[in-house]
Amino acid sequence: MIIGIIVALPDEIDSLTNKKVNKGDCVFINDKTLLTCSGAGSKNAEKASQLLIKKGAKRLISWGCAAALKATLNPGDLMLPKTLITEKQETISIDSAWLNHTIDQLSPFVPQTGLLAESHFIVAASLDKQSINSHSGAIALDMESIAIAQVAIQHNCPVLVIRSIADPVSMSLPKAVSYALNEYGDVILTKLLWFLLTHPTELPGLIKLGLHFKAAKNKLKLISNQLDTIVGFEQKTVTK
Image 1: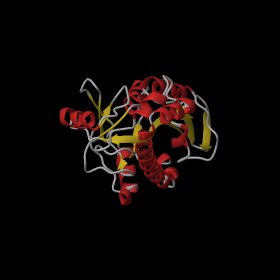
Image 2: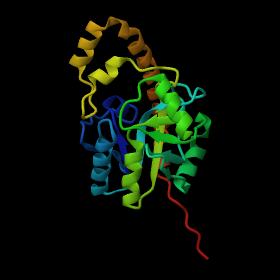
Image 3: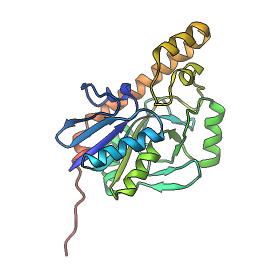
């Protein structure tokens, strides 16, 4: 059985494989696991999920980083949510034997299973993160998992969300991040450098975010050591 993993950013790909995976590519990283780099955002994630299904994936995994919406979550903390919540406050349950198996296997990493929220844009301000937590009860947020889960539901296949916290709720993202990100979810280096050149006070915040992102990616690398166990799970059937 083929498992499809959707990763938004090339830097997050590094937590799973040393292979070069360009945006839109599908690459086998082992005999059961097909990986694609989607780019950021729900449209890219939906397109990548549909591609993996066409390539034969029977299960999907949303893999990468997330933003914390609650003060108790720190950079590098692991999220394995049982429920997702859309911007329209609709919930999607992803509780399953596969998820419960994964939570058990990754228990040494103390996975958080609370609500994961959806956003169609980068939520940069700390106050906005706190507001989403207050209105939805979600403890973390990303831009791709809802779209991936919706494709999984359409094709009646199981889905997992494996995310590591990058930016804490107390941190407002540097404006350089939003400025340098294009509509396809790619960071344009020239735009980033130009913004830093004209706004040098942004540099300390960008360095701090880089350290947080490194903590998140290091946790994902540790989780990837358990990937064979996660993708190799087969639900047992009981015969009478």
